[in-house]
Length: 218
Image 1 (spheres, rainbow, N blue to C red):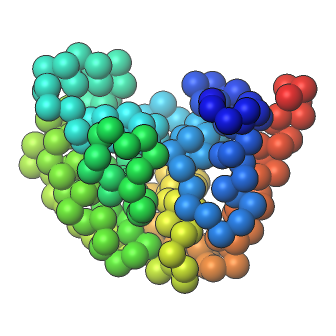
Image 2: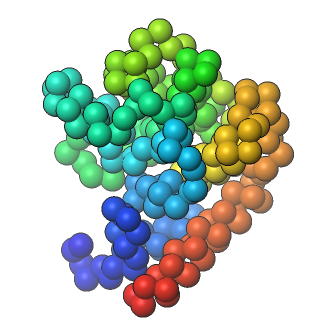
């Protein structure tokens, strides 16, 4: 990492640097490494998969379908009942960490549909639809529908990534507790995701990272 950036934490395949952690401390747009860390530390059963944002971005922009298939095969997507994707609006593959908005796309096998959670009222819809179209063959879900899911609106221009984390956590908790239906999920999101809860989540994720870093002696 350039500029003397200090490694803070290694967690599975994720490496977090000081500059990443600083994003949680202020009014900053979160990057893909923070979202990947958050996804990775959620405890979910095998049939629920949260895909790393960098992998999602690569799938959305790789033009070689055969190469994508060979790489994605290891994810065993047809075996998953729920798959979650963090969607970014970056269209420039040469710009690492680009884009200015995150949303969450969730595939639900039981109902064979994609639910798109966007805290900016559909700002990422075109990007989410593109991803859904590309990923359908790999999910063995050619006839899957696409629906815009109710999502609380962010109250600023930088918390979209935190909303992705918050919605992802609520949905994972609902799935593991047997409340993963459209009605129950919406009720839980309305109950648990408020502006205050989103602000608190920044602190909670930061504290989780620092606690793990201390355990590692970083």
